[in-house]
Image (cartoon, rainbow, N blue to C red; front, side, top):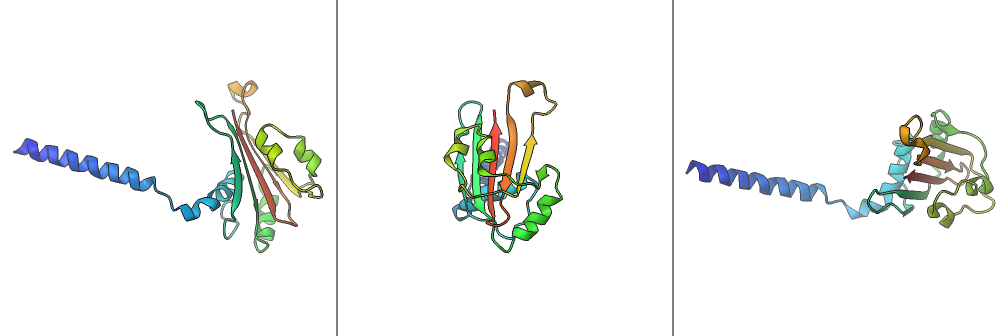
Length: 165
């Protein structure tokens, strides 16, 4: 009888564990268009600055055995959040407050994502960000792992690019 109780408890534990796994994997799909912008802002040190994450357009080529690829996320920051975002990025390491025109942006093509989404010809980004995650690592000569972002203060356009190889 004790063996049956132990087996029942193990079975119940397994069912509960499976239910937790299933429930933890369920996401509110209404939130899906906003997740990429939140992730991009977090990656470049700006999480919590924007009051409401904007809808984003994302192109992602990750896949295959190693998951190598790039991800480009583009969104517009609401006008009420632009000044706060500008103040925050101006003080963060990795951000450079200097003009970047579309030709400079185009000079950094590492993957098809970036060539598919191109800013308007008259766009001048006011700040840019770069973090090289390979710096000081053994495989730095053979892989590209970096985050890069561009921000236009006037229009609120935010381009975020992540490369993993």
